[in-house]
Length: 352
Ligand code: GDD
Ligand code: MN
Image: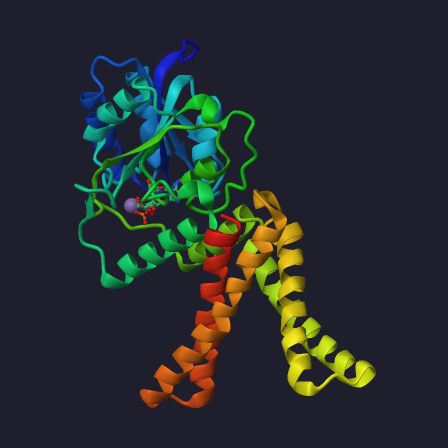
């Protein structure tokens, strides 16, 4: 039935979407007239009978197919399971609950025709938006995007790398090894996929038509784990190096004073310089080993800008004191700000 090659495969992951899926498929068919496409619903044994419903539908519509999985195995892996049987030259992913307007599929597909490898339907480009989200969910979403942009270089050109609505040429994921944990498979495709040209098209994320979101708190944890993994734990390495610098600083101060009888006032300057060199070398050969372009000594000199960290730490501390914040809390917040500044400095200036 589906043995022939198609132009486009639309993958719809479902968990309890019986009330939505029929209407969505209808709209997809309406908006893709003239295109040779198939619909692949990947259902995780939904208790509400979504799977059987689509099964029935697939007997009537020969370009609709359903994959039944034994239980709720997660959104990302559902999409990949769908992609693995897709016959399309391109693969599109859309949520079942009509929060993603299917009318946009045709335009997205035409971008593939124009030579784009990945097309992201985006809430955050001009003309896009979000309907009916609480302030909290907006903040969570914005923070999540900020972290993706901070930690993952290849995601930076995309303003909405956490979108659940996207399309790609199928060979973009050929041979890619995925974690496929949680919700954010696009992030992984952007970070690991074989592509050069990516474009965003604006859309408005509407309120759910029926049923409930399956997003749970534990998806936030999944997301943080995924970010850590995809960034190869760069932030954790950076912290570790920073701590080693503290030891080098204290250790060399002690050695200079005790064994070389250096004046304490000057020894500290050397101790600071040793810790900067220590941190630089470890970061250069470990934390940012994939980013070592240009001259080693030039990077080392630039890295001295990390002195910015303690300065920011101190400024924040003083400001918070002026606002009457407890001095220890003020310093803790200062340390955090100094750390973030240093990370940004390394990421975007020393090893960009
Ligand atoms: N097969 C399967 N298995 N499907 C799932 C699972 C699962 O474990 N979890 C969720 N789904 C399906 C839902 O049935 C729905 O069709 C789609 O995946 C999205 O799930 P929602 O629960 O509606 O997610 P959301 O609306 O909170 O978030 C969506 O929109 C965001 C903004 O674009 C997701 O697409 C997010 O990834 C996206 O960031
Ligand atoms: Mn939804």
